[in-house]
Length: 203
Image 1 (tube, rainbow, N blue to C red):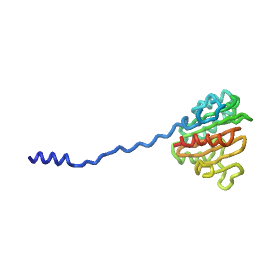
Image 2: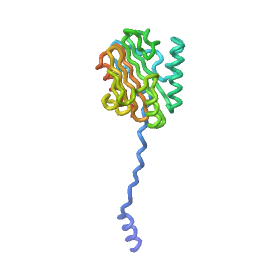
Image 3: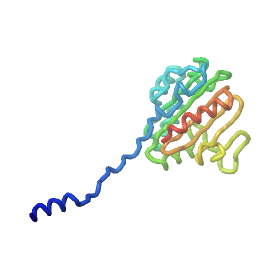
Image 4: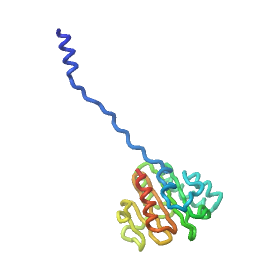
């Protein structure tokens, strides 16, 4: 009888339920965060080499060795700042712009994007502050006409944009990522759509 009471007592005890600690959401790959074919207007075609930056630079070297050497050096500086991976995508209305600096060639319509993932947010912010592919944020309080910085860009504190009719550019840091979008000979709506496509992927 005592044994039966003990068994009933044990069955009636409440035991804490242990739930596993949720694992952190993995960061998006740089190749996923860059502009994709579905993000760009009709009439723009993807350039060969778009994807991992090493592939992009290797192909660019066969088209313009001098430009490839400059961009390779700039990528090495970003790697030295802590970048773990990077990716580039270029879309143009004329294949001749595929061998231009981030697609910016004369009157050709083009969109280009670059995304680098860093080890932590501090590394990413320092890299953004130092400049990406030659694009350095303006000093606070020294913003020129057509240039916006910080929250006025809509892309966060660590961001700046450059807006001219022929070339529009945005460079910003979000989470462990630094992103760069360059739009040539396209209207401001296309530019905003491009940054709006990349920004949510930077988790």
